[in-house]
Length: 306
Figure 1 (tube, rainbow, N blue to C red):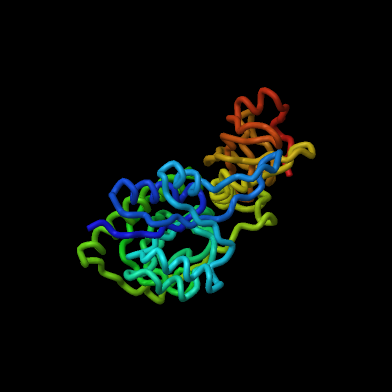
Figure 2: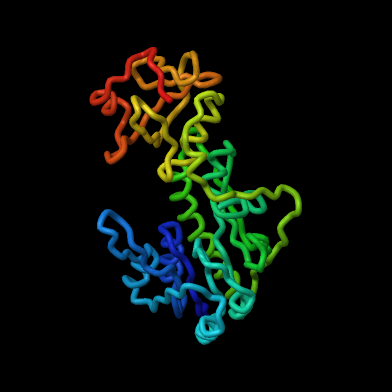
């Protein structure tokens, strides 16, 4: 028998899971997402990616500002869900909500727990130079990503893989794993394992003051910083007083004083080694490859970036 579900999610990352659950035939009683917010140059009210997909699927959408009041909790209980599926929702689920579904609330978390609990696991894994990442399906409790694990799957990180690349891969993987977990729950065969106490790390939210590139660091730290913040919020440097965001890079050849342009291919010296910038974006412009950037911007070997 298909399960009666409440789906709770907000960004693009959550959409593949919603689509997969609908395709699997589950009865999605309601979709919870963040309320529309002003965005863009015109500051028009924009619905979340999850709401857009839920409307396309003909599902009921709820956008409460909080789940902490009794009225919101009564409405949640009224769905009489077997389980809730939570994917990057953005609101805290109080105990009354966590305990309302018969089987509990299950979360798609974009790391191999207990590593990278918290807000920015994808960015932090790439910034740290991790060799692998993955997805964990977890039964939620009141802690910060501390619940028992149902399923997990690993994914190798390629040397030049960005956070955006990993985001897309894990979104697809998470949708598949959640579908598997709920299928096991339907059969009464879902096994939950407590998280180990060793290996806990926290993925703090990315702050603006850590986005500027520090060319004095070794090339591999600079490279991981660039790809870990791509495409958003983006690592950046200044060239002649103009901010340039770097979206992709790779290992470069040569060495020199940190911040020195080493060749006509946008290779920049670091504290140790160098990185070659392969995709950049000037403020207000579209992303472009290094060759296109250099055709429109004079960057002389031997000059410095800040």
